[in-house]
Image (tube, rainbow, N blue to C red):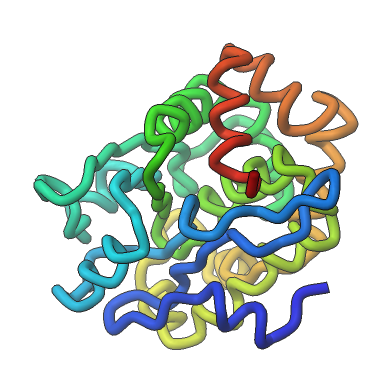
Length: 246
């Protein structure tokens, strides 16, 4: 299980973001280890200072994938949008405030819905990642928890990281977000009741456990899921090269 010392090693201590973490260092399939400096998960990047940007780029990041929707982009502009120092892509993975027509009773339901309904967008995310082989990729949303959490879980599952470790990586977010919880509360969409929204601010392990159970029970795991989306064997092999230490 992850220790606080290991967690602190993965966390980038920035001035303008609180949940920027390298997903490297975890034990993976076949006695291998997830490579550090390849994939970083993050919360919003709109407050990053020049120092923060230099630190992220110094970690090897050359591709930034912004998973937020149009209103979020307009209200909180990503500092790497238009930058000449990194490739920036916006792939609006899901709008948590938009009605889906499905019964969303928990974050876990939302993650399952994302797997089932956002396949073409997830395919684009992983295609962009595969294109970046040789460099680091940072992917993020507003809190670095839900959309980011699903993408991180798929990457770690593809690497063969054990489920309890993936769940712990997800649950860690709640610790790091404490400085911006009031800001996240202010961003509550009007159509979502405050008491329900409060439940959606956490990162209860059961939510990720539900998603992983669906991923394996319905699709057979991340690799088969990505193949079902249309990723090629070459793209998946490239992602594994990025994920796993040789």
